[in-house]
Length: 488
Image: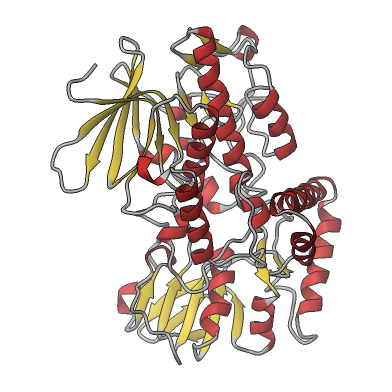
């Protein structure tokens, strides 16, 4: 055991939605365990503390993005970032989690020692020159799925010639004044669909310049059924019912996208048509070249994006960028798009395990050489659980299930008097056909990083199902003595 190490039963990395979920489940189910949360930033909340761009909000309803154990009681089913951050902080405070968080603690490396049967973490603490060592029996990584410091920010030809401001939503300047300005947002994903109507309220005009359209779905920001049930039932009952309803709807839509993709595509396009003025072209600006849920659907609360287009506060242009000029952008078709501000809503850089350097007994671990166990552990790697949410549903649904699985593993170790839990390939698994960790999903931010992720197999339990109902059975009730998990 290294000298001057702080030893815990369990260490959670990250104090966002996933980390707070893990901590609450752990404190309730294993109150005797010693644990802490290591958070690199100065405050909790993860994404909801990091992103500060105009209109930042959830693109999932709060009855499924919210925690399973804490009802969301606001009338706003689609919540803005500040509301979500307050919900996370209130949850941490009400369950006595905040005092367990070590802020300004950046984990840079983690080494498993067979000798000590522990993870040893190298942690840089704000204001200190050399790392401290933290050790734990079981490590839970809740560091999100993207690099907080470096967004995906591809260079544009002649970008340096632009006379105005060029910003990325991940690092939004607090003092950016876009009132009465011509704003061009580059991109077509959820961030662009959120930013455009928010900026259009005071900007002279907002242009969304996209290479490829996305499916945009209008949905009420207030769930009338939730409002009614909250008046009639205790908050926990109402929340549970609405949560079940919304999960069922999410899963149904996703199944339709796999079974009847053309029919779902036409339905979504018809829905968009009804939101737009008759003279607005659905093709090419609102008709993607892929089927629904090959990439995430974009949400427009109360149809705000469509309203901006209808009132000519938002213009959508589908084209490629040729080059940047001092006062705007020249597209490949030769069109000039005037701009005072360019917003590069170009996406995220996917991150696995918080970009921490992992090793076993001093030998560097390459996670791309491993197979994923149920989407949350790695073949051959002991006592390590990772939270990676759904791409086709709310992140927290899987974060909560992963937290429950963490507790089950810890309790099982105690009951058996074991020190390690390690998923190992069976003989019949060694000839499996490898598939990507996230399969059948074409978004650029995923495709750019799949080579760094663990492999998915062709049989259970080496699958990352992206199916909440299947995961409920497996993670909440599945047999831990399955012949794959080895407890020693």
